[in-house]
Image (cartoon, rainbow, N blue to C red; front, side, top):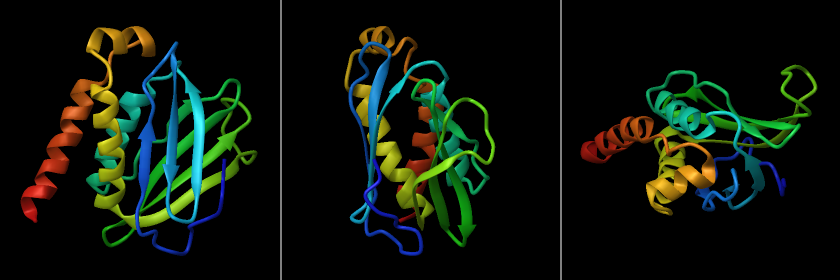
Length: 164
């Protein structure tokens, strides 16, 4: 899962990928030049909706909600927190079950410009959104893609592009 830590250094890039959902699950990969995290997740929580909303919040410099990914019974928690200027910290913590506490294990983290971080996830989510027809996506993921939350995130990303 974890290759190395990027904490303390600004990674040159962040790559995020999701495979197409299948039978209520999918694989997420998050990587920098120095570290990589890959894991398969199951559908129980509104993970994709929370991820889109959390990315929008991070892009607006609002301390983002925790996004839970079910590993069954373990859970992975993704957080994006503003740290300084236009930079945010992405962290992944593994919990042995749904109870949050001191028992978590740090799995991955990096600090980088917030727009670059959000954009890496946005691109992966756009690919995920279009990888299957909507009805097939709903059948494989067990709920529809969160189009409303993704539209809000897309509006934010487009506003950044217009500012350049």
